[in-house]
Length: 224
Image 1 (cartoon, rainbow, N blue to C red):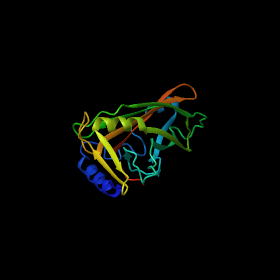
Image 2 (tube, rainbow, N blue to C red; image 1 turned 120 degrees about the vertical axis):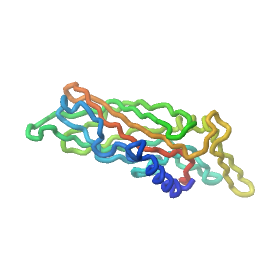
Image 3 (cartoon, helix red, strand yellow; image 1 turned 60 degrees about the vertical axis):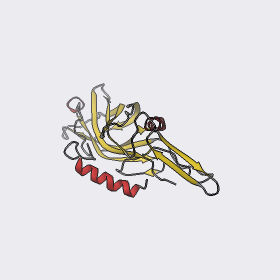
Image 4 (cartoon, helix red, strand yellow; image 1 turned 180 degrees about the vertical axis):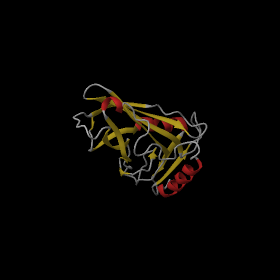
């Protein structure tokens, strides 16, 4: 599926779903729902969020490539895990009082809610990340796994997705997007993805960030 066509579909879906979600942007800059600032003295804020896949930075476009295509008889499409790159900034609740405190994100969770009836469930992701440090007045970038190849393969199985290759006399690839699995549906598969993060400051006080919400479209995208 060509990405240009899917972007048009995504824009239409965002308009139609505005009454049900906070748009396809979900929780953008500011991350409403962040908590614990009264104890830490620092409000963790989200500056922006981008999608990284094995091909490159995809910006705030959330197309998840379900299947690894064979580009030709000897070359396979670059394919694998997808990540959200989140840029944080800390805001002092009382800017007149100097603070040496800092926030450390220790855990995160990614959950997937189908936006269409009959879609297969996707197992939530739970992870740890000890390297993300948020201080007042500085930007910090953290990377969070949002879809691994194992969940992609399980979704292929659940939907009956399959591809076959004919190499002679010319290289041709046929892909069937559903019909033989437990959940016989066709792509793109639309899910509401929710990323939640939490951790402690240097004094042991708890805080939360998010949730960040995005609508993701899972399909077979051509990156050859």
